[in-house]
Image 1 (cartoon, helix red, strand yellow):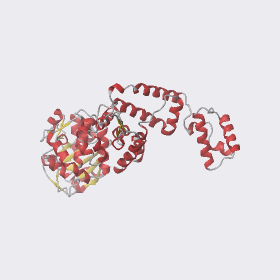
Image 2 (tube, rainbow, N blue to C red):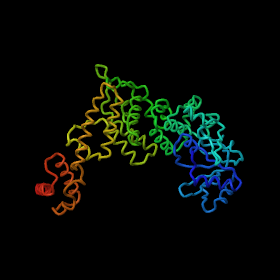
Image 3 (cartoon, rainbow, N blue to C red):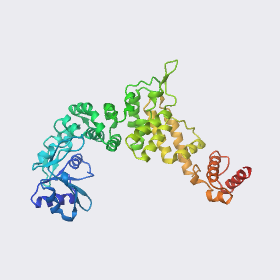
Image 4 (cartoon, rainbow, N blue to C red):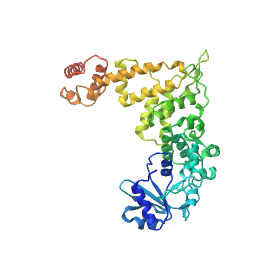
Length: 441
């Protein structure tokens, strides 16, 4: 285990000044897991003003009221925080104040999970009063102290815990799990932006499915639309799983990307509202994407998801069940509306959706293989499917006398004609067709 030299110098400077100093929290956890820490946090017996004095111009007072000073090194911004205990958490998120203490044990006792309550100093000495190393070996996520207290203090810790379990492929300690279920309502006190950050990381974890399967009630606090999906029988030979299980298996199967995994989770959210049963007792969900994509839009807006991610997810939910004929013409029409990135995402989502159905109906994988081959051919041959690929542009049409909105309408019409193979994508041919249209108006 190696502490970067710049961080070592921070620790050494504090020790040379007569203070204790430890790397603490996630960086220690990641070192023990053989991972490269992304951030380095230091805790110390030095008071904030003493830390400022030790580091001079390299110190930034980023949170003096909470004992935090950021020390700027060549490669890292190291947060140095004085040993502390937290005051009362009246809003289930932030302590009203902190009290500085002199013991590293007292500081570690206030932390959320045992795997984040370990410290390491320059001499290689560990402080691990709650057996975080043991929980790492057991692959178990467990609260420091009493779980109900930890989650009542800061409700976001529940979602952070589930995120850690997903990212690390850990199980959740039974007492911690019970407390998450019983205190889940406290998530309503948390800013939706913070919820989305944790939810996004959870979805992109190593094993999000195990968490989603066990904690749909927790996710349902902010996305209640998902709750009716659990245990909802689809009553269709294509589906051997209930609606929730199918959805999370789609998440499990699809590529690791925030857009794709969010789309996989929400792609069938409209099914409950569109469920019908025919005379043979077979379940159907006619029009479920048209019902589902506005629901997905509302759910993402509720968490204030960024516009690009939201729009991409909503589009994939809208398109996920559309058939695309295995022809260049059909593929180019889809490319025109979706673009290359989203069309590629759509094929990935369709593939995962199909693989999360009954194995007897996995034959659609071959259809998707054909569409991927056609896509590759269209791109390799640089075939025209968007205005930027057209052999004419707005200036060319202005030279022919087109003005205002007529320019855009003509360009769209020419693109349709090229995709439909009514005219080649050649300047002379397109110009001639544009002239013909102008003369007939």
